[in-house]
Structure formats: structure tokens, C-alpha cells
Amino acid sequence: MGMFDLTGKVAIVTGATKGIGHGIARAFAAQGAKVLIASRDVEACRDVASALDDQFGGGSKIAHGLALDLDERATFDSFAAEALAVWDGVDLLVCNAAILPFIGPPEQTPPELFDRILTRNVHHNFRLCQALRGPIAARGGGAITLIASEAAHKASPMVLAYAAAKAGLAQMTLSLADEMANEHIRVNCVSPGLIRSAASTGALGESGFETAAKSIPLGRVGEPADIAGAVVYLSSDAAAHVTGETIIVDGGRSRLTSRGESNHLKHATGTSFN
Image 1 (spheres, helix red, strand yellow):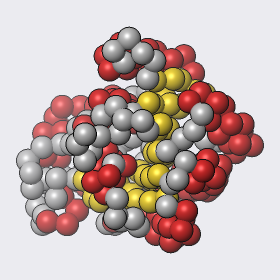
Image 2 (cartoon, rainbow, N blue to C red):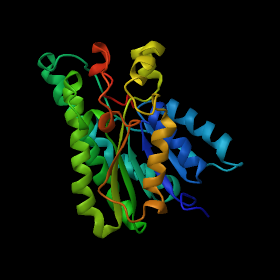
Image 3 (cartoon, rainbow, N blue to C red):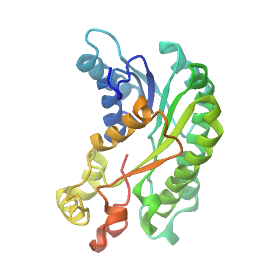
Image 4 (cartoon, helix red, strand yellow):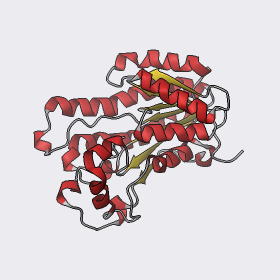
């Protein structure tokens, strides 16, 4: 068994039908975990689960789709109970699902959207962690990974509310890691930079990616697999002594570069489009 092997683990990944979440779910399955695919679209969840069964199951069921709407806080306990019933436990949780309903000048952010962005991206992820904390602890501990954004670590005025929410996740990582350490639950955070996905492709197009790549020291836009690798590490025995950390996966753009970015990309691409 390798140090990144997840055989015998049960993982929940939210927002797992596309983009970063789908990449994480695939990586978990490839490392031997059983994966619960969670999103609002239960049919899409089932389709992804079926595809993972076919590719990684070897004739066994290793993925299952569950409906989860992070806007509906009242359903979190019933979701946790339903998840536990599938394989009699949960070891790993990845809070990837997020919303970005507004990009524009911060003073034009509609108040109702500002509230929704903070509530759904921060508060409701906190409540989901609490709903699954007991079950993870009951298995002897495990790992929770919160997906933030490069936007949380630099000025990002065109996505101010989203950036503030993602910065809140990075801080929440520290507090939850401290609170859950005695339950042997490690809590860490991954902050993606610009990641190629259906959403980011639709927003930027290939020309936008080419422009953005010029501001990235490693010379390319990220892929979902880049984020999945960091999450697998944090979820595995390789990171058994790592908790409370945030890993920025952005090709070095937020920390290493002073390269200029074109006006139309300067702020809006400081998001992972997860």
C-alpha cells in the first residue's frame, strides 16, 4: 500500500458532478476510496457515480450519488444520515461546492447576493462539517478539506463577496482544525487559482486562458487534476501530521509573480470556478 492509498475510506465530495469536484471524486476513486457524489442535481450525481463504478470499481460499486443543496441548511442532518447508511460510515469530507452569482464592481454587489454568497459558502459549509463531524470521529478520525480560492489571498475587488467568503473558509480551517484535533480529525484547505472547467471556459474562452497563462509563473492554467492531487495528499496518510494548513495551487501566480495582467482579467480570474 502506498502512502496516498485510500482503500477502505469513504469520502463525500460536494459539487462533484463537474469541474474541480469531479476531478477530486475521480482521484479518490483511483486511490481506492468509496465516493459519495453530492450536488443539487441527483441525476447528474448518479451518472457520475455510474461512470466511476465502470472505470474504477472492478465489478463492485464504489460510488453513489446523493442530492445535497447547500442552500437548504435544514437538510444537512438528513443528508448525513443518508450518507452514513450507504457504507456505514464516512472518513473524508471535501467541501467543494460554491456559488459565484456576481462579478463586478464591489459597490454594485446586490445586498441579497452578498448575503447569499457568505451564507452558502461559509456558514453552510460550517454546518455541513458539524453534521458530519461526529460520524467521522466515530470511525477513529479522518480528514476534512475545504476548497477556498486564490481570490482569498489577494485583492479581488471584482469578486469581493466571493473572495471574502473564501477567506472565511481559510480562517475556518484554522479554527476547526484546532477544535477537532482531539477527535483525530484533520482539517485543511486548498485554494485553487484559475482552473480549466466548463464554467471558466464559458466565461473566458481559450483566448482568455492564453492571456491568463502569461501571468502564471508555471506558464499554464490549472486543471482539476492539479487540485485533486493536493486534496488526495491532505486526505491520505502522507499528510497524517498536517492540519490547519492552506495550500495555494495556482502555478505561483498569487505569490511569485509581478507580471501584469490585462484589465479584463485582472480581478475576475482570481477564482477557481469550482
